[in-house]
Image (tube, rainbow, N blue to C red; front, side):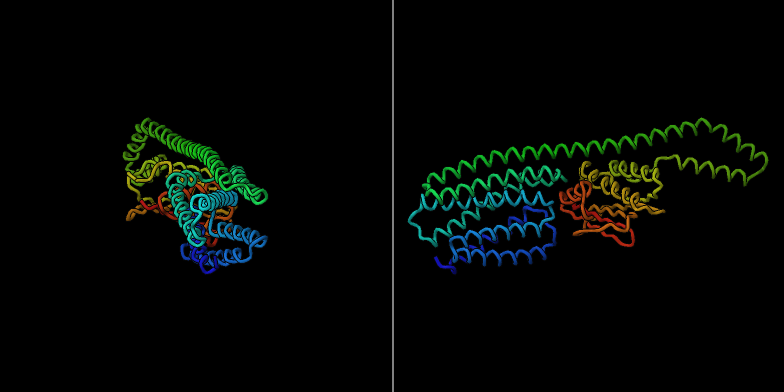
Length: 423
């Protein structure tokens, strides 16, 4: 089969890779830049694939390794996942692609031996593409919500999953090498591939089950965080109640004092005393930041923490009582934003630190803007703080769950964050 007949098939394969990667990964770049990198990848893939068919032998094997390396490089460039997670997803996809490709090749030989080479090539190509897109749809429906709901399961755990994916891929390579040396019958090869596929599905079932448990652990951590916020607010309310009881108890003394000022016809004294008393009452009152109980609870908790650290805390909140955002997601988003802002102020080593938080709901967009003093050496990478931790991963996950976006900006020692959720 000549190269011109193979080029459309190579293009279809490369396009399938791009579509899968677009929906499989958390993209680092905007759509326009992703399209540019995709075009470069497709051209490279078609050129290397055509060269592999022409070269044959050892050169074809080396070119095949180059194609795999090119795909992995494309994974790394367009994805913002941690490196170990990229490796796991790449090996999983590449291993699945290889199993389907080898199985279809054997099925063509076993069940459709009379098909010409060009027809068999394109039939296999179309079936493989359809199978991969079907698996992508299943992955998006069942696996993506589990994987992306976990902010960060730890690099070490991802490396363990990488070893599992690598084991299955190396097993496939070993079968191909064994067949090349021993001329194993096609039926035996096919049955072995089916067996490997079934075992792989079973193991990955266990893997995703464990990831699901990790998700539950992450949600349990957020529930504990919620309990801490609630405890802080309850403590503030109890303190306020104690102050109010004291004020009620002391009311007769205040009235006696005002009466004495009145007897002395000391109006300025009365006004000064009432003003002082009003200030004391307002300081003891619990501030109501929002009509939404969860938002108010989080803001109240961090207002208290900021006050203890000598950090000015200002709020402009225009959020209704009811939000179509789960409480656990509000905690992950707003709680981690304020936690990071608090740490940023503390690590800055500067005086007159502050946190300014603005929230509002408009046109079904829930917007949170947080400004805080930060250290001068804070660096951003792809719009997020370099070396992002669990907190920022939690914020990003919450934004993605509601098809929103997250943007960081650092200017003149001030870190500004804008998080938007589409409700």
